[in-house]
Image (cartoon, rainbow, N blue to C red; front, top):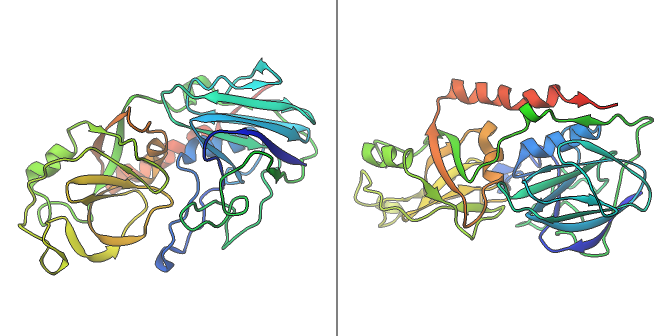
Length: 325
């Protein structure tokens, strides 16, 4: 049983959730899906554990031949118009497939940017350092430590005794936008020591443009003329954004000179730049759906209590899938 790639136009990789946790002190971010919500929902729709290995496809544009009989589910960006043997199939619900079927997906027109394909039984790729997730920078995990190529046969795990089709109700599907609001927690290096109060107000009020150079390592935003609360970085460097090397949190927003960048799941774990804010874990899925060169984002500050509440709310849809006849 396997998934065979018959068309690959983008860097499609195998991911699992939550990825390769516990190795940040050794210099490795966890990898895993950029949009953990669509990823987990796709897995739940086909009866897998939410963290089972599945495919992440930026913008879509792929076709796979399915060498098994079971279920598949596609979640994520709008406008990809998936088909099964040429006939349209819905997103956000499981679809019955048979041996030899071909699932095709066009370019997602958006809103949203990434698509997630889960198959019943999960993708049975080797576990490397505790995870099946592809870490693109390190070149480990996934399928042979790289993105998918035409002709690849990625193994599928054993099928369950029975398959139950499910759907994410329309009211519980995540909303995708062209202009996003993303929740962040202040710091660890914000005002008043690093930024001015005016800097922070601007950071959380202006609309930031997502750079064309966005990817799994990070999502750069447009340059901004911060005032800064200090004249330089002292021993760390001349620019006020410089600090002595320190650890970076996943989803941290670093400022390199005047360019804020949201760190992605394959990003660097430490460096010499300020981390002015950190994306709330529950909101990280939104970063995965930001469309490079097109979307904008505004950051909204939340406290730790609200960040925890958001995490509980984000998982609500996973427990309320609709069983189809």
